[in-house]
Amino acid sequence: MTAFPARAVLASWAPARRSLALGVATLALATITAEALDTGFVPTAAATIAVGLLCLAALLAPPERLSRTGWCAVTTSVTLSLLTAQLPHRPEHTPGMAEMCMLLLLVARAVRHEPLRQMIPLASAAWLAAPLVLLRLPGSEHVTAARYGVPLLLLALPVVVVLGLYLRLVDATREREKNARLNAQRLEYARELHDFVGHHVTAITAQVKAVRFTTATGHPPTPQALDEALANIEDAAMQATDSMRAMVGLLRQPDRSAPLHAPQGLDSLHDLADSLRASGPDVCLTLDPRLLAAPPADHISSTAFHIVREALTNIRKHAAQADTVTIDVRLSADAGALTVCVSDNSTLPSDAPPPHRSSGGFGITGLRERVHALGGNLTAGPSPAGGWQVAAKIPVSHHAARRPS
Image (cartoon, rainbow, N blue to C red; front, side, top):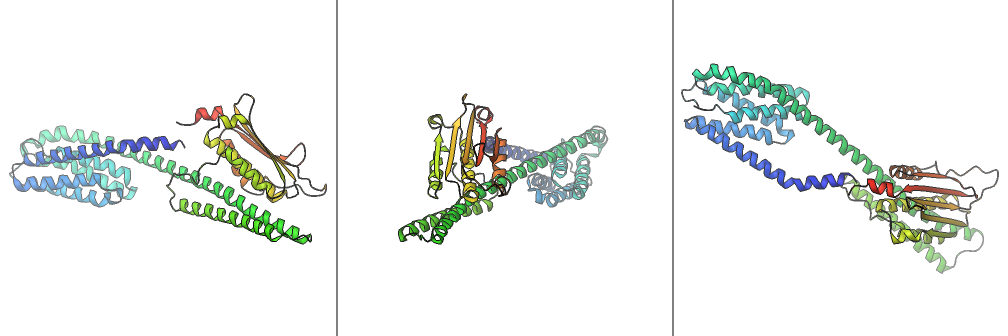
C-alpha cells in the first residue's frame, strides 16, 4: 500500500527526531539555568529555574495533560514576575527570554490541541504572561523594554496563533487519512471474510447436497465414499474456522497493517479447480505459460485468484446442474493486460427465472471494486455460448508503473 513507504521513512526518522528533541530540551534547560544565575539572588534563581521547568513540561506534556500543566506554568510565571518586581535583586541582562519564548509556544500548543472553550482562556493567559516577564528587569529599564518588547510580542501573537492553527489542520488531516485507511482496511477484511468463509461453506453445502442426492435416488454412498465426503466437509469447516479466527485477531488490532493471509496467486488456481472437480463438474483450466515464467505483481495475481474463487463459489451455489466449467487466465497479445474468464454450461428451463449471481450478494460487488481500483473492469452475466460467465481484464504494465516501490 502507498502508506507503507511513508511509514517506513517516518520510522527511520524516529531516532533523529528523538535526538533533536533531546538536544532542544537540553539547550532550553541550559538557557533557563543561565538566566536564573543572572539574577544574582539564590531564591529568585531557584524560582526562575522551577518556573522554566514548568513551562518546558507544559510544552512536552501529552495533549490530555496540556491544560493542567499549562495553567500551572502560566500561574507560577505571573506570580514570579509580580513578586520579582517588588524585590531589589533583579536580573541585569535578561528577564527570562527562554521563559517568554516557551510561553508563546504554549499559546501555539493550546491552539493546536485544546477545544475552543479551553483554548481561548489558556492561550490568552499564556500570551499575557509573556510581557509580564519584562517586569523582572530593573525599574529604569521598564520604559525601554515596553517600547521594544511589547510591539514584538504583539507581532508574535498572530504568528504563534497561525502556527497552532496550521498544526491543528495537519493533525485533523492526518486523523482523517488514518480513519480512511482503517475503513479501507476493514472493507478489505470484509471482502476477505466473504471470500474465505463463503468459499469453504459452499464447499460444505455442495458435499452435503451430493450425499443427500445420491441417498434420495436409492444409491447411498459406500462407507468409504461417505467417510471421504465427511473428511472433506471437516477440512472445509476447519479452514473456515481458521479464517474466522484470523479475522477476529485482526479486528482486535485495527491498526495492524499485516495482510489477512499470505497472498494466493496463480499457482493456487489448480487447487481451486481440483476442489470444484471433486464436487462433480469437469473443470478445464487454461493458464498462459507466460504467467508462470514471469508472474505479474502479487496484488494482480491475488486479484485474479479471488475472481476465480468467487466465480467457482457462485457455480456451486447457483449452477449445480453445470457439468463443464472453463477457467481461462492469460495475458493479452501485447502482454499489457491480464484477462480472467470463468464460464459454465449451466442451462435452465425456458420458464425459469434467470439466476441472480451478480446482484444477490457482496462477492461480485467487492471483486468489481477491487478490479476497478487496479484500473480494470469486470463483468458477470449470461455467456454468448450459454451458461454464465465472469470475465475481467486487469492492466498489468499500467498498474505496475503506478505501484509504489
